[in-house]
Structure formats: C-alpha cells, structure tokens
Image (cartoon, rainbow, N blue to C red; front, side, top):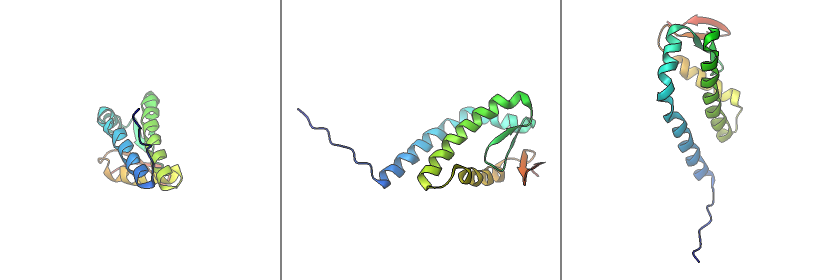
Length: 117
C-alpha cells in the first residue's frame, strides 16, 4: 500500500494558491473584456467609485450584473487574503480601473457622473 503524503497548507502556500486562483479568474477576462469595452464606449455602463460597474441603460443591467459578479469574486479573494473588507478592496480597484479606462468612459467621482477626459 502506497502512502500519500498529507498536504500542509501554510500561509505562503495559501498566498500562492490565491495568486493562481486570481490569475485563473483574470484569464477569463479577455472573453468578456470586449463586451465591457463596447458597453463603456456606448455609455450603457459606467465605472463606479465602488469598483463595480453601473448600468446607465436598463438594457445593460444583465451584463452589469455578470461583470459585477466576477469582480466581487476577485474582491472577496483579495479581501480574505489581506484581512480587509471587500468594500476597501473594491475602492482600491476602482481607483485603478478609473485611471486606466479610456477617455469618454462614464465614471462616477464623488457620487457624480462625468465623462473621463
């Protein structure tokens, strides 16, 4: 009978596993990134200061919900790994997202909508 070694999960190993999981989640991004860019360009959705998208057109609500579900999964992973709230993670990501989106994208700054210049 062969003995199978027991896997001991240490903090460094858990960090590596979280990084791999995040990378796998982000690898799916190209499949929906094009749709996201199209929705942003049309103004149907905008980027919120919370790190989530907001449907500015009711016809884009289902897409916004799907995008936000993917983001929430990523934010939850990061929050758990860092011992902070999911809202804190979302706001950090929001700053980065808003910084990177192209000009003309609707963004919410201080609860006000404006087109990014």
